[in-house]
Length: 202
Image (tube, rainbow, N blue to C red):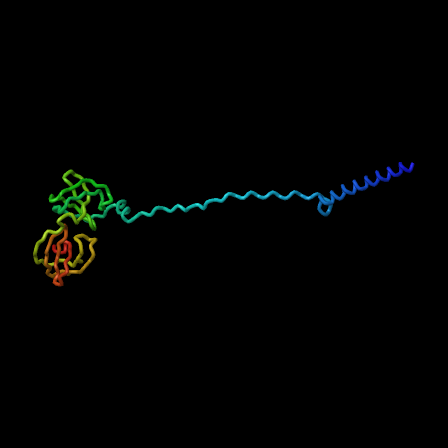
């Protein structure tokens, strides 16, 4: 009888310690409030870096390219001039344009017009193109005294694109020292030389 009571007490004590240990474990694993702890949130994925877009700039057209693209403004002329050196004849008044033909000194070319620095020529082949004014004998020398019939600007070149270097007036005499295209080269009393249109002497 006594032995049975001792076994019952031992069994009860063991059961007590077992349930106490289980309760303590639950308290450690659960936060305050008795509810199980929530799983930590997953970190948001880091987006891949995006390379900054490079702005596309429109290519600027150079002055030389504009000269090739733009139609040539030509002042009419009619002259037969001798070449001082061999030269290409270009499709437009710029050396950046297509070469049409090659001409050789000391032959003559038929000039039908001028720009600031080029002459329009008509070739024997029937083609038309432009050569630099520097490759021909542009001025034919002469020596005359003529009276002006109209006021005129005096230009640095035998075309209207030349810089104005002086003014001459109707009724005055001028010394003619050369002829070039539709202009004459004059020498003023001050020593200044330049070009005036033939129309100022008509």
